[in-house]
Length: 209
Image 1: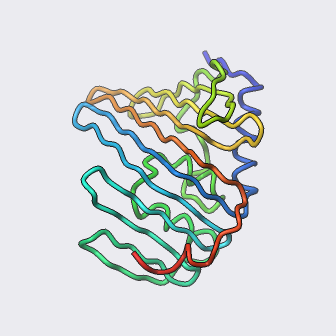
Image 2: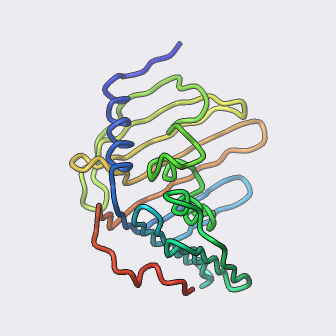
């Protein structure tokens, strides 16, 4: 039996609309991944400017860096071992590919929020069994509404928790917990210093690692 709160669904729709309406965006991102086999934390900065410019820089605990950047015509990927330039895709696909190259945004949710050119077309995989609100809170000094979704996919069961800015309706945290016969996995993506439609200098998209 499905239990879906229409007001929670409406808030998720507003989340999507708020993000996809952005012309530019910047944020610091912290990704925490915990499973039976690993416990990792990654820090990054993310900026993009539509239709075709983006930059992601990852910083790992051991000091390693990964940079993925697109200036609108060329994409660069550099990780210390690899330094590769390729022709950029057209339009917003260039942003999606730039964000995808680093593997930072483990869940495709942020890609979907960023552009309709993303390879996924929904916030929630599989079948949603329960969708509703949990307790509002404050993250990075921002009041957020919290929506939780219990889903079932062919790989098992999961829970997604979206923390959404009360005023701007932008994502501040995404939590994903999954479990199946093989393992359990917890992912938390936290977005801080979020800026909607900031004025970005062209230097942000220079093809330099």
